[in-house]
Image (cartoon, one colour):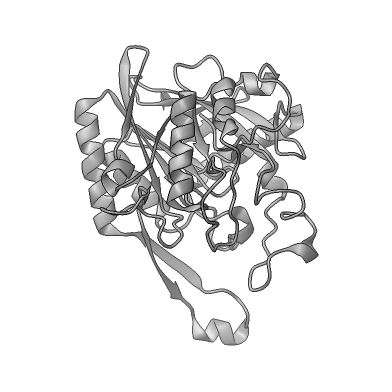
Amino acid sequence: MVGDVVAAGRPRRPASDPAFGLLRGGDLTIGNLEVPYTDSGVRAEKLVTMRAPVAGAAELAALGFDLVSLATNHALDFGGEGLRDTMRALDAAGVRHAGAGATIAEATRPRVVSAAGRTLAFFSFCSALPLGFNATADRAGVGAIRVRQSFEFDSTLLDETPGMPPFVHSSAHEPDVRAAEALIDKAKQDNDFVVVALHWGVPFCYLPATQGPLAEYQRPLARRLVEAGADLVIGHHPHCLHPVEFHENGLILYSTGNFLFDWCDGWNAESMTVRKDARPAPPYRAALLDGPWFESAVFRIRLGGAGGPSLRLDPIELDPDSQPILPRPEVAASILARIAAMSRELDPSVVVDAGGRLRRNFGETEEV
């Protein structure tokens, strides 16, 4: 599986290119669709709105994607009409999807797929949620796990260090978490495996260095979903790689970075220039197209082992047009070392070897 994907039908290297070849060889290939496929709808009033031609869905299929998550902060960039166009285009291309629908029941329903003689229930939820994007009983939208936030500051410290940001406390909205837990528990009773995609976290360009890579709500939420029965939690939205964690019999990928990000309507060289003087107006001047954007990985996960999921990472780079390429050796080594270091902050037993295999090392015994 891979992180964020924007396939917009533009000319690029063929699907036989070695980097795209990393998508082959598994029983199932999963990505996060970060753009609606539509030529219609009304543009939402938000910082970045994107859309790509419906032909992009067939390109996803040609690249080898079997299944995509739709619960993102861009799914309704062109409203319910744009969302419906996206789902129709994916259905026509034979790419299965989860996380969106005409009602909350549809948006939170798992997509059940069969692979290697086993069944897998796939959920997609969004916590990076623009106003009105969550599905309701009578409104199209995405499956949501909303987040509550509060802000803490020390007035004495602020007097001495004026201008420093407050600390952001966050917690997942308990009714949403309980609803997700119930859905996961039922899906695990009916299927061999459960996988949950979560659009969440803070993009690196907005993240205070003092906070660390994860927002406060992420680790408790991911662990609860694993405890409810999820074998794998797949994170995306920060557009960079974040730690990996084993918890009980599950695996958590906090952020899987980018895989393919075509220029498209709302996302192009003119609107997203790297010139700092062309950034969004204050109070935020985000440098989104920066180093972490261009370093990522393909995640090879094996479910069903005696010790839970196993993971091997194939590092990739993105070229200046955000197309995946095989990395230079020093970049590949740097990516693996960075994931290992971040992951050890959560679990000191995590080891990533030179071949990208991630495991837990307990001294004389190892658990994969």
